[in-house]
Image (tube, rainbow, N blue to C red):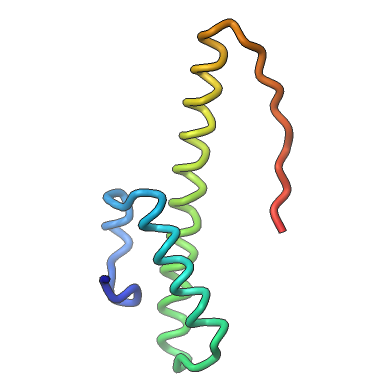
Length: 85
C-alpha cells in the first residue's frame, strides 16, 4: 500500500470509494494510536481530510445515481437526512 503521508492529493480521483476508505481507516488508526510524530500527524490529517471529502463525493454520486434509477422506474424516492455519529 502507498504511504498515505506521501501520496499526493492529485491521485484521489483515481481511488475507488473502497480504496479511499481503507486509506482513511489507516490514517485514523495511526492518529488514534498517538505514536506518530507531530509533523507526520499533520501530514496524514491533511490527507485524511482530502480522503473524507473524496468519499463524501463518491457517496453523493452513488446516491444520485440510485435516486435516478428509482425515479426512472416510476418510483417515489423519500429522502431522509442521515445522521452519522
